[in-house]
Each structure stands twice: as C-alpha cells, then as structure tokens.
Image 1: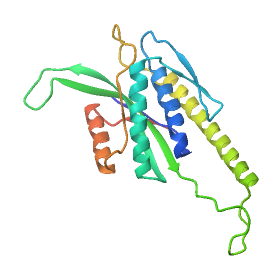
Image 2: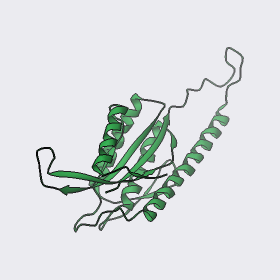
Image 3: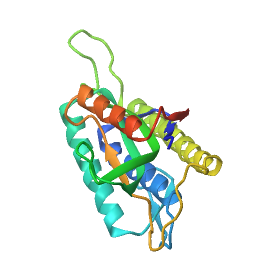
Image 4: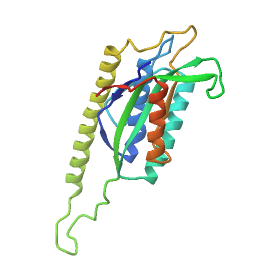
Length: 218
C-alpha cells in the first residue's frame, strides 16, 4: 500500500497562536477523513475570523489536545525554530505471527505534514528616545504591524484549509474500505519531541511499513 503525503503550506506563528492554528488544521483533516456517522460541531476561532468543523468525538478532541500541549511544551524548549507535525492515518491488519514479526501491524495510507515557523516577538523598548537618541516605534505603529501580520496569517491559514479540502477531494483511491461501526480512521500525531534523528527514523519506518515511497503532493 502506498502512503499518500500532503505537505501543507508553512505558517509563521507566534507561540500563543499555535494552539488555535493546530486545532483548526488537525480537526479539519480528521473531519474530512471521517468514515462513519458523526456529529459535526462548528468551532469559531478566537484569534481569526475562521470557522472549522470538528467530528464531535470526545476521544478525538482529547487526543488532538494532548498532542498539541506536548508540542507547545517542545516549542517552549526550542523557540524560534521551524518544525513539522505529522498526522498519519493507518489501518490495522492482523497477520500470521512469526519469529520476527508482530501479529498486528499498522499500514499507513496517508500522511499530512503541518509546517510551522514559531517565533517569539522581540521585546519592545519604551516609547520615546533611547540613550542613543534613536526613535523607537510608537504603540500605534506597533499595533498596525501586529494587525497586518495577523491578517496575513489568517489568509495563509485559509489557504491551508483550502489545500486540505482540495487534497481530500482529489485523492480518494488510496482510502481503505470502511468497516462497519468505524466512525473515524485510526491516526497518530508525531513531531520531533526527542531528536530530529529519532523523528526521521520514525518516518522511515512508516515508509517501509507502507510498502514503498510515499507519493507527494504539495
């Protein structure tokens, strides 16, 4: 089975924006790959004029929130760094056990790469003249810069959501058959929590378990 891969547009976010941005993206992906009967729930973002939809499943919400909190903690230890969060769908297959293999295996069929560039804005000096007699930005100009950056991020986030919808509408042949009683596809969320090398090895293992190199769509 080939694993389809979608690389989403990179977003530049401040630390306090990470939770909302990730909830919006992750829930949108899971919702559009839901297989069974769900209870859609509209969510309005507080920081942006955007509404997204959740599956309405408590287990999904908890799983996503837990991973986001882990990622925020990791970002706090690695500030001003580009990072990638991967949401991967898989199906569970039972096979004949042997000496070297497990009875249960995961077949990865779709991977979403969420690319973020998180940063902490520099601390602004007080308004007025510094000891070097250089003018610093006044609150009005600073507020305009923040508003402009927030507008650009909102537009970029909307582009990512459209990218997700476009992908799920165009890429359907690789989605496994629906089993009775299944509401949403099993998935896992990973990021370089320990080291970049360990994260890379995890990705390589998925490719091997999926039976080949993943197809790419950016």
